[in-house]
Length: 252
Image (cartoon, rainbow, N blue to C red; front, side, top):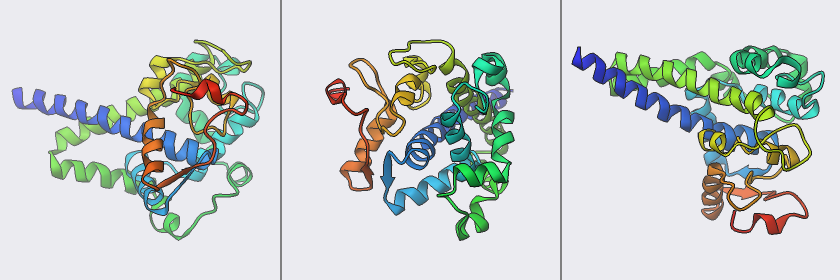
């Protein structure tokens, strides 16, 4: 019994850690890199992010990008894939994955909103097979630890990743501060849990900004890694902040 409890505890810790890594990859690569072109990654980390996303969440990047870009095109009005204004924040929090799939599995929507991300040979060979990536990730974890730890980690990671990403769409458009005149909100506690994504009002004000923290006291954890990648010449920061507000960004 003690061994089982220890395995469950270890699996929970690993699951939470993997979820944070996947959330960070989502923020840096899928969101800031692909969706908004705020940063341009060197081919080496770009391919690394593709593998990481494939093995941790099984998401097809062009589908994620299409859903997110449609959200920006119809924020909290008819056409938004996951608006709590239209659907209620509880429904968006609990059914965000299904709302996401409704657009992600529509070829016409993906072609319209992610036409700059056509399928390539790596997608056909590996990355379009999400369950294969997930199975490989869980299998490797089972080899390194054991099946109980791996299964526990997979469940904890899936639940945490889905709930935290849903929270940006649900809570992040319902509760919190609105320093800018848009319907999204800023919640620093959510930003800590989601790699900076909780500074959602800032993001909607300046979607192409690589940095989500606009004021002293706001902290965007993913920005630290973007700065590091830039300093070692593995990324180019194309947009650092909203135009005309560069003074607000100093020291953030």
